[in-house]
Image (cartoon, rainbow over all chains, first blue to last red; front, side, top):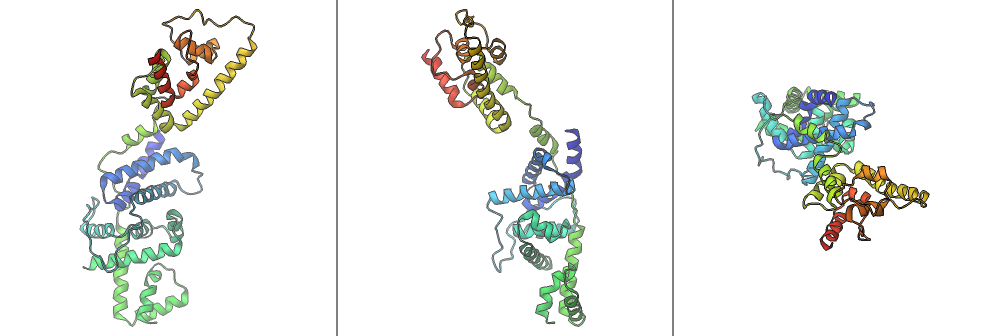
Length: 159
Length: 203
């Protein structure tokens, strides 16, 4: 358990950042972060070392977030055509510069699929093949969501 | 290349995913079209800002205590142990206690539930085999039952009581015939415990 706590301390910030950006709610993000680490503990024996532990853990976090979004029926939410208004104003993550806060707010307003792909590709630096593997989407679909996310973000940031 | 085509390739251009020929065509157009060049600058700026976002955010609350409590649950929680002891001692169980037991077995520790299920099958069978081997021996102290004596798994194992013997120890000399075995009592299913409670009420 002590060794697992060290892993938790090393990775919790990255997992929490994903959960917070995907939910925009600190309490839900905390729950999802905890769920991710509990699942990691339960599945530790299935980690074969083929990928880095951080990648394996991040994949678990993505699955946990996806399960939450699907359970809430939010995963397939799409922006209504021509409606780029932002109904909610979720709290931005702390410790961000003003410029980053603008971007965080704009990201929070993206449809869930586009938001997740943008976070994985443009913020975390995963490639489309990895993103597709993590999310269960086709590479072409992943790419389409990324382009949509960038288009919406440019529009939001230029307003 | 037209502005529409360039706009279509702009993301792939910045991501370095264009074939050489297409990339050159895009660059040629960007060199002559102010509007497309501005779009490229905006997109590049967005990606640079995204790359600068922190990839780690510290949660406000300490999350480790909530995790460690979920991953270091004792093998048998105190509530379940108390419920087991209660069954062993009195043959019945207070309202609510059975929930502690069955919830833990069936939800918190399905592996343990499986193990106990195996025990529930294996122990009576083994004891039955032992009983067959010692069929010539005098009956095990059924008639000498001590009313205040507690019965538990250790007693069952130590004295080689079969199901009937164990039930007799718990319920007296004339146990109801359909009271489930001690092994099943340890499984803690609500139905089993309800049956026991009913029998006790009738008795």
